[in-house]
Image 1 (cartoon, helix red, strand yellow):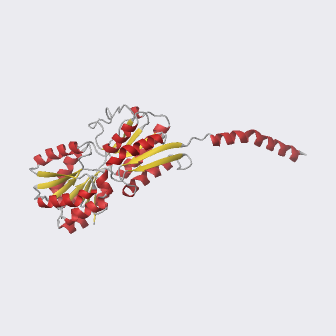
Image 2 (image 1 turned 180 degrees about the horizontal axis):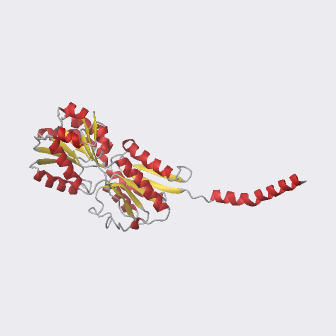
Image 3 (image 1 turned 60 degrees about the vertical axis):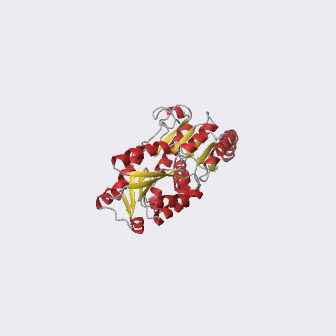
Length: 330
């Protein structure tokens, strides 16, 4: 008898509580996140993996508590506006942009209300994306890869130290990137301080690579500094091949280039920036406004030298420069 009463009581509890449980399951919010990249998935996989892992650690499970709409321009800047508009039409709650100012401007042009988080902008204040780092205003915030264009002055200095007899170098740039003019101005000031001349080589698409490297060789430049752009990241393997074939001492802003075979890189850890981007997503999903979230700048920069590349181009890196490296690839 007691067992029957207990069973009936348990059944009643189940009947009473189960609708609530079912209702709770049905009302669990599934967030919709847009991700717009100027490069391809393959070119940025390590960064995306870091972003995804951090989202998972924060409790967001793809397909269960979050749906991510991925869009990749594959290095074609002209595709960005339509891809951004597509994300807006997909009713995403937040849009993450990766690939600097061109990608951020495409998203900002598509919406003034959906929060936009920059994973790796260069100088969003100078370019006009945000009002200030402390108070961005509007619907755009996020992270920068540099403290500003002055990072290219530091790269110019490192290039001069690595190639003591350097007198003329090339600057690889995409003129459609709004950051390019700021970077070239900074490079010009540094070059003047070190008594160097330089040649800006503009590349708008991958078909220009061979022709422009031939131009660099004719100009007899001894080294190369690359201003970051999704186009270059997307084709970094080919760029590194051309640098090494031309026996050019090159320096890049992303450590991924040195790991892929380039001579030198000086810049912030991109994977770490993408992990930090996930925390911005979390804050906005929890109610924070992008206008109130300060833009974050990196504080740690890594200098990497690839001695395999140095051997390939016939360059002996001075001991004092090797000593300054945070990491040496042998």
